[in-house]
Amino acid sequence: MMPFAAVVLAVALVGTPARCDPPQFGGEKTSWHGFDRYDFLMHESDFTVKPHKAGADEGNAVKTPVKGHLRCVVVAPKQTAPGNPWSWRGYYFDHEPQAEIELLKRGFHIGFIWCDAGKPWDAWYKFLTETHGMSKKPAFVGMSRGGRNAYTWATANPDKVSCIYADNPAISREALAALGGLAKADVPLLHVCGSLDPILGNHTLVAESVYQQLGGRISVMMKDGAAHHPHSLRDPKPIADFIEASLKPAVADPPPFVGKAIIRSSFYGSESDYREVPGEKTFAVCRGPWFAPSYHRYEFRPDGIRGTVSVIVPKAPAPGKPWVFRGDFVTRDAAVDLALLGRGFHVVTGPVPTDTDGPVLQQWNAVYKLLTDAGLSKTPVLAGAGGAAGEVYAWAVENPDRVSCVYAENPILRSRMSKAQPLDRLAPLAKAGVPVLHVCGGRDPWLDSQTRVLEKRYKELGGTVTVLVEEGKGHFPTAPRDVKPVVDFIVGRQPSR
Image 1 (tube, rainbow, N blue to C red):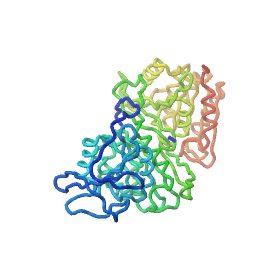
Image 2: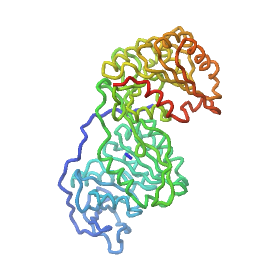
Image 3: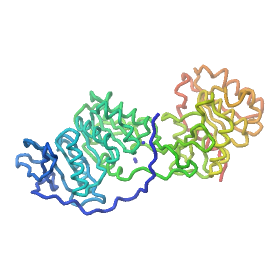
Image 4: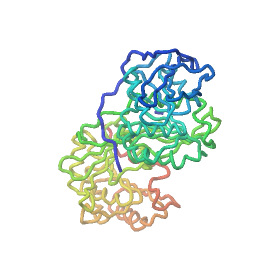
């Protein structure tokens, strides 16, 4: 296992958190599931904090309010992890605490304040971080109404959050509208929900869609057949693993060719995985970057180019640094591109200025030179779906010796990059021996007038062309049902190094 608005890159050195002196808390301590518990009272008017001893009848819970004060709790691990990390719960203390108990075993403190998010939360954060030296970026644990509190405070303080684990959460409209701050700060989110939870559709699924579009990292685990309760997981290891991993931000050095004025976001697939969760005696629908590979996408504007270039970077470039030169923005259902990223390909979307009717040949040539001068392969894959396919064909026709192959999905072979249209200019590609692969739906309205015409003409010119027709499919989805033949075709056309 393992964020259109976008995420502005904050280049940072990432390493193991420094070991700090463990926090020391005064007052009498009690026990919470075998760990030292310290209780406090916060004055409701001036937010001052003083020690308090939990009542003997409270056990592990917080039951008794104190007039004029707010109940607060800290539980300390037996040995503190480097950086003094902690998790913060804003409601329902001791309800399904298994994830927090696991975090205590890993050296986290856990904190709690009994009120909704607001000024008391600011004071509690200051008390723990400034007075007691706990991490400046706590992890949030929010269940139901607690999720609403977590998102309310986190969206108001996005630079003070390491991650959010939300369990069947409610999320206010104001917090949903402010998710961009968390995405900009690259705060990872994990939602664990029941598939029958009545607030799933207008809270978690809305947040998932918004956060993805903002370029943030959000993962969702939906327990099949479960409702709003029970919260958490009987085996909390996946939750604790997520929180612990969030101590190490997924910030990497950008490729040098993108320059300094860049926008970074996270790219990962939208496909769901159905996994058994033995402790829950059911399966869960899992998706997002905690369950599948996630890649950095950089948007930048090279010198002299009016349009924006998008580059998705593989975790480890393949030998020869192969890449895909696309004519369209890569969406999360781009199954072929995801597979190629996993094989070490860069995926590049060429620029399309907003003041022209389409791509400009000279600008694409400039991008090609920039990337190949930086060490990427001299012969990229040209790829596009629908109308974008015509534009990549137009560039390929002008640069046939710079193309390893052409791949198109339900293409429309018309271009604004050049006056002469691709269907009438296939000879340079055929002469250069550029292989072509089209994947088309049998019911796509463009099949006969575009792909079938190209197939006939390209073969007459001596070119190699393969057409895979998927019966019953229309224009969408453009991606093939089985990506393996396409990936094998593309990988097999790359120069050996």
